[in-house]
Length: 75
Image 1: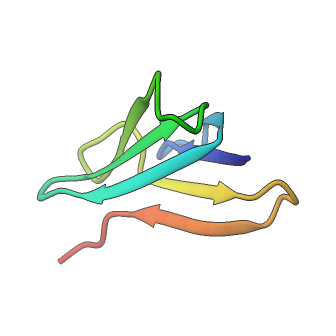
Image 2: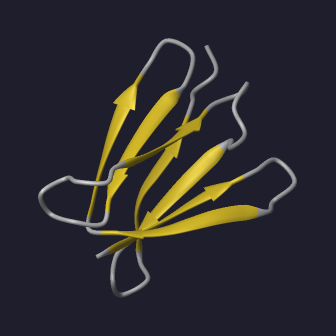
């Protein structure tokens, strides 16, 4: 089980408890696909990037340790 916390520029956030997640780098933003089941049903997507609602996402494991950070690099 993972917790994915998406943080806005004003430091408010939205969190999801998920079983699996996948990150894809796009040209304009990063897409995070999340699922609460192992078979991948009922996926939900959020986007991280300079023109998106969220600027960064933190993924933590069941012990509360941050295991991944998702952010769009500026070129």
